[in-house]
Image (cartoon, rainbow, N blue to C red; front, side, top):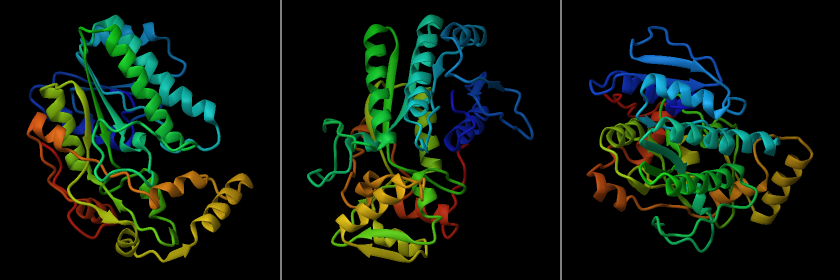
Length: 318
C-alpha cells in the first residue's frame, strides 16, 4: 500500500501482518516508518511518489509479487499549496496505477470520500452511489478525491483485466485519529451556523479496517459508500467533545472564516469548509452491505466517543 504511515495505513499494515493469507505487506510512504517490533511480513519502503518514476515502483511491485494495491497516499491538510496537493493526491495515484499496469497487479482498492458528493442544501438523505459528484468548489480534499476517482475510472477502462473497488467513506474516527474532523474537535471553540444542525456520519477505525480486509481477501469491484451506523448532529458532536459553540449567521461566519484565511490568521480552511456543518452529505451503505454481507459494528456516536476517549475504544481487527 501507499500512504502506509498515515492513520488508516498504520492500522491496515498491522492488521494485514496478522492475516494467515497474507505473504508480504509492502508499506510505501515518503515518511520514515517506525515499527518497534517489525513483523516479518512487513517491508517498509521509503519513497516519494511525486518524484519516483513509475518504472521504479513497477520493479518493486514485480520483485515483491504484489497482487493488490491500496493507494492511501493523500494530503489531508493541503494548506495553501494547491500544486503540491494535486501532485500528491492525484499525481502519486497516477504513478501508482502506471506501476500497477506494468507489473500486472490485478486489484486496486481505493479509499475515496463521501465529500465527492459535496455538502449541499438539496442533497437527498441518504445519498446513493448514483448521486452526481459535486464536490464543494474550493474544498481541496473533495475536489482531489473526485479527480482521483476519474483517474481510477480511466485506468480501469484501459486495463479490463484488473479489478477496481472505490469506497466513498465518511470521516474515520477512533483513538488517535488525525483528519479534518479530529483536528476541528481539538479546537477550544467550535462554530455553528444559526438555523443549521446537519447530521454527520463517522466510521470507527475497526470497521474501516474490517471492510478493507474483507475486500482484499475477496475483491468485489465497483463503487460503494461506506459509513458507520446512524448519525450525530453537529451540535451534539460539540457537546460530546465538551467544546463551546459559537453560533453566528451563516453569512457573517463565512465572512469571518474567509477573511481570516486570506489574511493568514488561520490555516485550517477557507469558508467553503463551513458547508460541512451547514448542509448534509449523508450516504447510504446498502449497496456495500448487500454486495459483501458486511455490517458496521459501531455507530457514529461510538466512533466519536472512541476518539474523544469517552466510550468504546474498539478491540482491533484480527
